[in-house]
Structure formats: C-alpha cells, structure tokens
Amino acid sequence: GAVVSQHPSRVICKSGTSVKIECRSLDFQATTMFWYRQFPKQSLMLMATSNEGSKATYEQGVEKDKFLINHASLTLSTLTVTSAHPEDSSFYICSARQRLVGETQYFGPGTRLLVL
Amino acid sequence: KQEVTQIPAALSVPEGENLVLNCSFTDSAIYNLQWFRQDPGKGLTSLLLIQSSQREQTSGRLNASLDKSSGRSTLYIAASQPGDSATYLCAVTSNTGKLIFGQGTTLQVKP
Image (cartoon, rainbow over all chains, first blue to last red; front, top):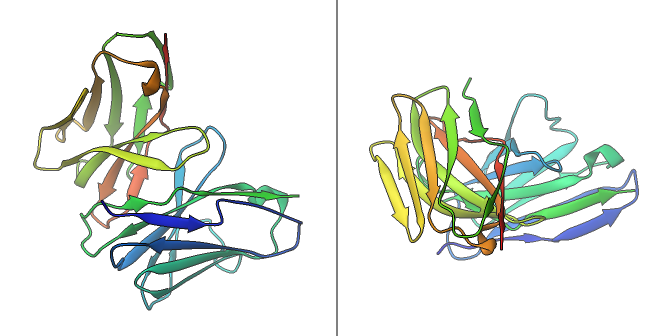
C-alpha cells in the first residue's frame, strides 16, 4: 500500500523559533497533500490543501503567514510553523493523494510539536 | 457546510461483544466515506472506504454500511477484542476532495 512519512515524529522547541515538518509520499507521486492539526481528545481539522507547484489553499481561520506550506515536488510537502508559541503545540498530520478528487488520502504518522 | 457527527463519544464493552459505531453527515453530496482507527499519539489507519455508490464494505470482523440518502453510516465490529481498543474516526470526502472528520468514538474493550 501507499506509504506517507513525516519527519520529525516529535519536536520540542522554544517559543519564538520556527519549526519545519516534512511530509513525503514514499512510493507514489502526490499531486495534492493536506495538512491537519489535532488537539488532545479532538478530531482532525484541515489546515490547508497544497497542490504541487502552486500556492496552498488555507482553511478559514488558519494564518498563512504563520503556517507556511511548500509543495515543491510530487513527493514532498513541508509545513513551517513560524515564530511558534505554546498554543501552537499540537499533533500535526499530513496526508497525500495521487491525483483525482475521490481517491484515497494516505496519512502520515503525525508530528507531535511541543512549544515551551 | 458539511458536518459529521459520531455517536457515542465513548464506549466500553466486555471482550467478545458485537458493537456498532454510528456516524451521520449533513450533506449527502459526498464522494466516499471512510472509517479510520487511531491509537493514542499515533496517526490514522484506514479501515474501510465506501464509495458513494456502494452500500457496504467488509474487512474481517469489520463491516461498514452507508445510507447516503439519510446521511448515515455504521461500523459494526464483531467479537470485539482488547486490541480493538482505539479511537474510531469517520470521515466523508466532499465534492472538493476535502476530508471532513467526525469527533470520533473512543472504544475500550475490557478483557
């Protein structure tokens, strides 16, 4: 089956620093990648949708200057949390889809971010 | 706006019981519906995907049904085991390709 990896799996950083999270599709080319965040005991909330070679589309209420998304190739998307604050601490999960709207999204294992 | 609701929020059953998890959605214009499993602190594992034209899907002890017209899906787990303890998430794919998740049902199966 299709595999999506995320790196790092866990990161602890100081308030004010920036953190980059990578999402890779290992055995397929992903035209579209999605970024979600999940707070404890809550469900996944879509943050943004990124298509290879174009700007990401952010969901309402998500600051695009705060959460920078780059999808420079068909196998890699990155999420950079800029000037992180403790309230940004969360579980960030990416998913990747090959091409068509109705196709399965394959999820990464998630990245736990803790901002001190 | 599509909304997905899962009932119950939490469920505790003794080992061996059959159980049903419920999912409802407000907009029937969906591409498909998926059931996921999430263990604490982990990512998502896809269990079953039902296309909008399908009524059900089965995998081992799991059976998922879909009634698109009424906006309902159920996940049936037969002969539950302690290893089934996890959070189960239902998600629908909208016509724009976005996955919209329910809040999940946290299942505990007691030995």
